[in-house]
Image (cartoon, rainbow, N blue to C red; front, side, top):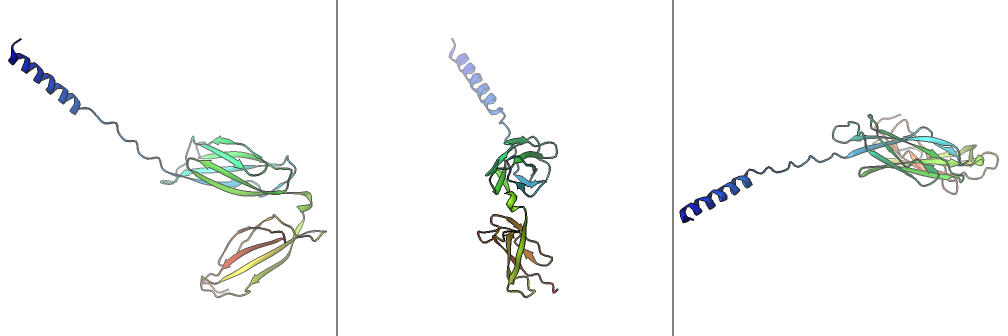
Amino acid sequence: MDKKLLFKRLLFIGIACITITGCRKESPTPPPTPDVVIALTANNDSLPADGMSSLTVTAVVIYSDDNSPATSLIVRFLTTMGKVTQRDTTDSNGIATATLVSDEVAGNSTITAYCENKNKSITIPFYSEAQENVYIASLTATPDTISANGASQSFITAAFKYDGTNEPADSLVVYFNATLGGITYLDTTDANGLATAVLTSSTTYH
């Protein structure tokens, strides 16, 4: 074969390879998936410790970038006491639900919902029949007056006892609320039946 003809053929093949290689399209990088935000609620704040009573736990999942519902995502539920539906898939509104069945032992059940790389927890108390009737034996503030400067604090202590026996009511979840200022809203009574919250003053006099 003529050397010039062979060189032309090899040169043509080389140019074709370079052209084909240069025209190859790169696969587009998919956009990152936004984080999710979970809100977790229950349709009751406590259950009797009878092993049968139940409530519904609702997880609302939204995307953090635009607050749109996160649909068709698997939400897994775990509990520290009792039994809970293990998983559900978010609907068109980003909602997944689970059923929590109480334990036969009194105590605080922590239910956690997991979705993507996020989780959210709530606490549901299981109470025995003896715990059904409790009363606030005392409610104190230390100190009992604070300055309206938005920074001063007072410790609010509530003492709970069982009606009839006057024994300290322990392991109860207590919710606090304040009409002025800010307050830590949740605590669990200790062995002495005491629950404590911290009240921070507002800048408004009352």
